Length: 326
Image (cartoon, rainbow, N blue to C red; front, side, top):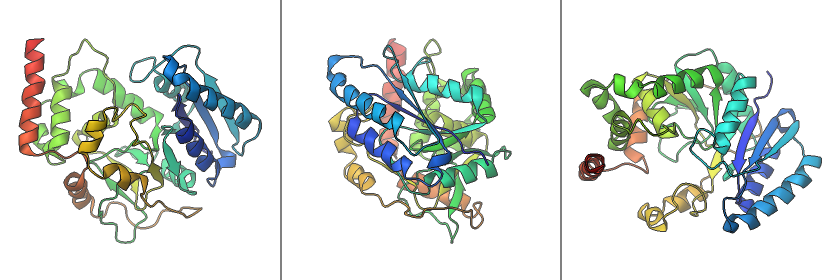
């Protein structure tokens, strides 16, 4: 089994990135793993200090690290996030040209010692299973039913806090989505199917169906989750999370508004203090198909992003009002 490469995009969050790379370097299989880091160019002066720290740190790591290879791309201009030529989009494109599967992480994750082992075992095991869409290293702290299994399947969430993709599967998915999959297959039956996984998912689905087709369609984790549900696909999740996400400080692309983050209550602290696996190795145990339907419902019920019917109607009204006014 050849180790999957890992890609990490970063800009200026030195402390987050430092902890991310150091924890990855301590993983079993780190010495077999090629790590590709893309350091974006600062878009304005406020990003320069952190960017310089990361650049200096990477110069040291390039000459002294425990990975098989550490490859650093230093962008000459700001690529940003979300567009067809964004920092991560360029990384994804390179991986898909050269690798059958690969692992993706943002710069604010901290990993268990067996993260790479788990990811590689699952990527190899399920590469030919058309029903398995991705391998997630993160597991939400919800009361999932596992019955002794150390990983399980479910469809409600595709957590992108450390995850693995197969190139043929994700290329097929992105092609279908950008060629109108949601619009061309819209039906009340599909809407009800999505609703089974939460009103927040239904709201997302409708926004994709009625999206502005003149704009670039950024295929996020939520987009992929809706696609996965409609296609009767699922992700592999670890019973014990292999990743702790530390990006709850309004420094990243999400939760830039402190008031939005505050509305989530103690979610930030819950995630930053989440216990993760401390094992150094991983082998598949048990039947991951067990309790799949129950775990989908649990994910919807306990979701940090769940919304009430009132919130759903209000948000949908605002969405369509905005489209009509345009």
